[in-house]
Image: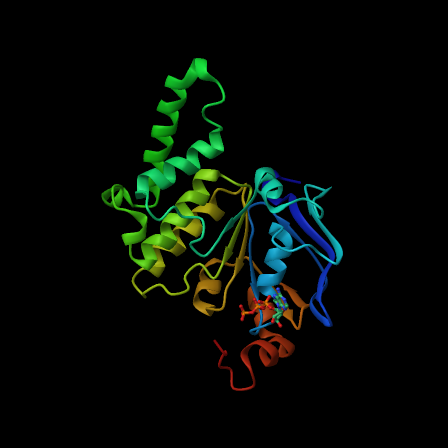
Length: 258
Ligand SMILES: Nc1ncnc2c1ncn2[C@@H]1O[C@H](COP(=O)(O)OP(=O)(O)OP(=O)(O)O)[C@@H](O)[C@H]1O
């Protein structure tokens, strides 16, 4: 099997119960390098909870999460991050009082573990500076490098968050409604960034998304959750055409409920 199609992440019978409510139930799915999977479903279907179970923000009450076959279900979120599960949080990863450049620099340093080897501080700092400049350019935020993160527009804050995730260079990228709250003209740049990540071929991308145009532009595959259960999994066009999905996700009128 080529490297870009190997399974990197999998959930087996994954579930969580909150008191009497089974928010996610018996979800078995595997995700491959070079593939972007959109996770869709009506409000309250369990999409964010499924994400939380994968990234470790929530502890599963049944089933397992596997990274390259290793069972990481009992690992903390921080440990999963170190192993390569990277999640863009809705702006909670930013340091609001630092500049764009300083934010990215911190993420690059964190990835590189700078400071551990004093004898090579100079060359490490040079490498950090180069990588920071490269990411600033990639996310087209060069002109904003000295702006304080808290003063950025919402769209640019979301972009900075993706930039920081890029700097951390995880193997698994998880995005939960990355374009939420963005203005129409801010959306294409972010989609292009996610497209670039997918085009790296060795990254596995998971995307929780409501907007059909975003899904259409990016998804190789769609997973549908409904009342916590996996209802469909497959090719986007085929999955969205299923009567079951049309009814549950789009509603009988064909209009999605935001
Ligand atoms: N910490 C929690 N405690 C209790 N119930 C919870 C908790 N987190 C989520 N739930 C419940 O689990 C269900 C799934 O919620 P979740 O946020 O995962 O849905 P979602 O598909 O992401 O919805 P949306 O599209 O509205 O974001 C909901 O009924 C929600 O109320």
